[in-house]
Structures are given as structure tokens and as C-alpha cells.
Image 1 (cartoon, rainbow, N blue to C red):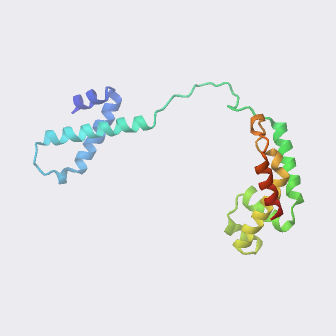
Image 2 (cartoon, rainbow, N blue to C red):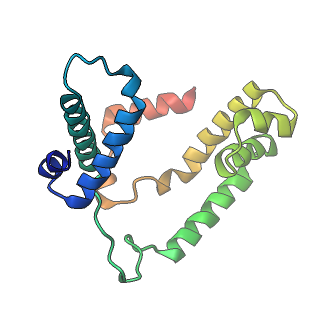
Image 3 (cartoon, rainbow, N blue to C red):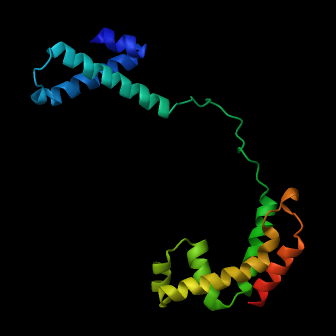
Length: 172
């Protein structure tokens, strides 16, 4: 059995683990052995299956060792000042909303409460929370639209059709 596991996995540690799993599996399934083949054939099949399972698991989750000491820097550099400015702009936009829209938006979108929890906290119906959030988000989208797609290539000028569609939406 050891030779089969070692030839299949080509790693003594993996082979030992697979063999142990195979024998545990054989022990648990001993009552279901039908004696249609020899016991050694049955055990070989269990060992091969255990080895194949280990190989599949290893392929689906390859591991790469992490370096002991890294550069100590975040992967993506952050601009703390720009984040603070954005936070202040968003806070000012939230302050412009009526209280009935601001409270649900803060609870749902900022604090992460569910619609049901927000409805319970504010003592209003869930549908009311949803509609107030939708209206408030629409207002915030207009005020904070300049924060979207701040990269240079994302600021593509709108064509005449898009401008007309935007005007129609505003009129509604």
C-alpha cells in the first residue's frame, strides 16, 4: 500500500497522510466489503482514491509561502488626505438631505443595518425605509456625481442622445 501511495503522490509526507486516510476509510467501510474481489485489490483502490483526492485538493488550492519579512507597505498606496476630503464632502452631502431621508441612508448604507432593522429602529415600515433610501440616494448621486470615475479616461464626454436622456430623467 505504501509503494502505491508513494508512486502516486511522489512525496513521502503526502503519501503517509493519504495512506492513513485510506486505512481509516477502509476501517469505516469494512462492513460494506462484498468479497467480490480480493481484500488487497479493494485496499489498493481505496489507497489510490485517497491519493487522487489529495492531489485534487492540492491543485484546487495551491499554496505559496509568504515571505518572512515584507516591505511593510500596503499593496496599494493610500492618499489619506484625499480620503479625508472625500469623507468631508460626503458628510456635507448627507447633511443637505432632509432628516427623514438621511437617517435611513446612514443606518442602511453607512452603519450596515438591514432594511428590517432600520425600520424597527426608526419605527416606520420597511417599504418606507426603502423609498426614503432610494430618494436620498438619488439626491446624493446628483450632489456627489463628481466623485465617480475620477480617472482621466473615465471622464468621457456625453453625446447628444445621452444629454437628452439625462434631461428627460431630471424632468420626471
